[in-house]
Image (cartoon, rainbow, N blue to C red):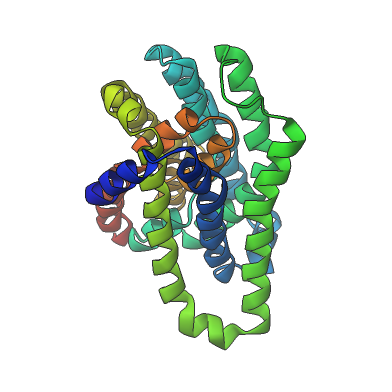
Amino acid sequence: MTQSICVAARACDRGPLTRDLITLALLPLALACIMVTLGFSLTVADFRRVLTAPRGVAIGLANLVLLAPALAFAIAELFDLEPAFAVGLVLLGAAPGGTLANLLTHLARGDTALSITMTAVSSLMAVITVPVYLTLAIDHFGARGLDNDPQMLVIVARVFAVTVIPLALGMETRRRAPRWVAAHERRAKRVAFGAFVLVVAGAVAVEFQETLEHLGELAAASITLNLTAMALSFAIARGARLGDRAATAIALELGVHNAALAIAVGSSVDTAVTIPAAVYSSFMFLSAGLFARVMYRRNAA
């Protein structure tokens, strides 16, 4: 991955045309691929679970929609991040759970159905939550020197186009061609993961020098957000008397955000806004993977 970032960084030095190609075309396309593969895993029953098992879903979504962004605001203040980076950290905190959270929950013997439902519902809610928290963060941190002044309706339309539409396309494909999806879903998810790696590499590449200059503070802030969000969400779930399997799903949902969405939305505002999500993505699988390994043994009991 490091080699990919270095190659991409040299490419980005060739001019603004390459930068625009990455941020305005390739990043949204990669995210759309990821969301289509998520749709392959979903059925209408996953959304009905909000009504049939409301307590776990409500606690998980409250953590995603309220706790994670609040922690991102607090940690950005704690580490005194530059305005663009602070906005990027909040944007990441506001992003829904990612599809790899579902996989890690499954590997950890957690409540996979709950994980999938949280990812599905939070992905739809992102049409509202992501633009709202993005606007609040820009106002709070005084980040008015960004490349573009984001318009709420434009951001809503962008999130809708790269999340809801491809998600619905994936679900409809599964409904119409279940055998084809069963045969190709694993390969499609591998391609989507490769696209995710390219998203991260491209996001770092367009601001490669600035990323290196601020890597220490961004890494510290991102690690703090990751570990704090997982620990607190797990404790809240257990305090609400949910079982270990449900608490595992909720913690991993808070630990593995859809960084690709944060990067795609952030790139439409300013490439510097994408850097926290890219840095976060570089290690979130390590911490979440270690947590999943620990919970695998605990959930087997």
